[in-house]
Length: 208
View (tube, rainbow, N blue to C red):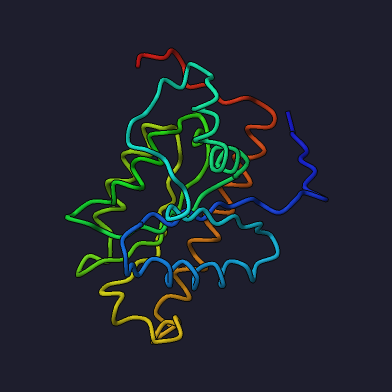
């Protein structure tokens, strides 16, 4: 049986860009600004920037099953934005072969907001360019029923990669990577948005 899909008039894909570092003097702000500038040039994307420096989530997680005013207050500035997103780009450094606690805290405060959505990564760090942090994040997001994108953008020694104006010293090294990553992310975001619309995603029996 053939299925006809009408894609005319589809709204732009909503992508939430999550800046994961909260460290003073972080490189993530400049890297995120550069990436956002590139992504904003595409008419098929609607961007929402979630900077964890501006999001206050405590380390103590309340029982989310209890819809208390306190829980609602803590989450009101971020949860609806994650839920509305069709996909995500996580900008992450690598700290001690992993990703920052601030990012894990945001992830752990949420669950269904990640389900059946694609996630791409822009990473930075020393010799690895943050790729060890990305590899660990792939495992975390797989547990949350998210689909991580194969193509990544990574910066080795980012303090040497950007000039004083926040632009890459050699933009040719990363322009192709950004296009490949966004193309893959938008393909998955569009496909999964349609799939969620016609059939709600099920995680199966809950064991935890």
